[in-house]
Image 1 (cartoon, rainbow, N blue to C red):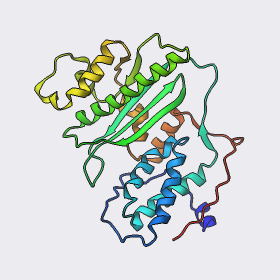
Image 2 (tube, rainbow, N blue to C red; image 1 turned 45 degrees about the vertical axis):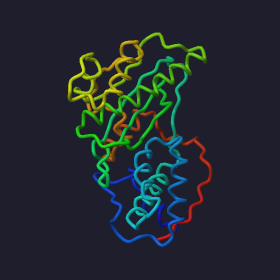
Image 3 (cartoon, rainbow, N blue to C red; image 1 turned 90 degrees about the vertical axis):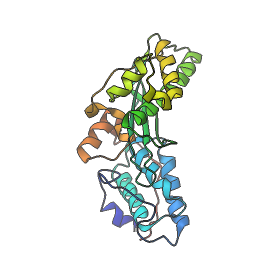
Image 4 (cartoon, one colour; image 1 turned 180 degrees about the vertical axis):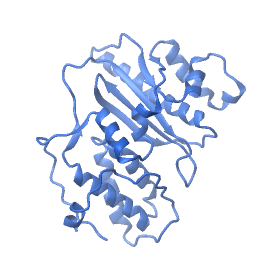
Length: 266
């Protein structure tokens, strides 16, 4: 079965615009097998941010997995087989300076209509931290979803500031937190809270405090170069390859990975 998958490798971990639902297709008889496959993929996200989003999606169906969900997991495996020598590259001599990107997939979950937060942190040119996570409550606007993502990224920046300070690498300048939602940036930079922003007041205070203390700046970045996009949604082959190159994910012939022995069931 593994040979069959080796000959049918794919160049993206998930098809574009695929929306997996709880009640589509027949239930799997062997749910334990599905859980083992997804669990091992979760482990791989420690070093493979390019599969974080899709692994986050398929992990939602651990309780009652269906055949379509298994097909999505099998596609992840085909992608991993095609990119088995891919890994994060950490260039030496880079400046010890933080920069961050945050994004959100508004109402992207077809089952709950909750949004997905995605953010990534760079130290110089090296990717050191990233996250893909479903937001806890439903956002009625894309601005609210983006703002919650910015708030989560801001918390990580504050934590990294403390860690780097303990290691003797204090940050002399604010960390740029790049976002592509102009409205969310304006709310964070504006000390006047409007009635329509009271439902995110805690996030407002959190980001505003970090902004006033010059821990972060909020530069606007075009959606086309929003690096956190890969952590929030699936995308085309061309865009996927563009973003993984910016994340310093490279294929190295000399990169040695642990042996991968996988038994797949139809």
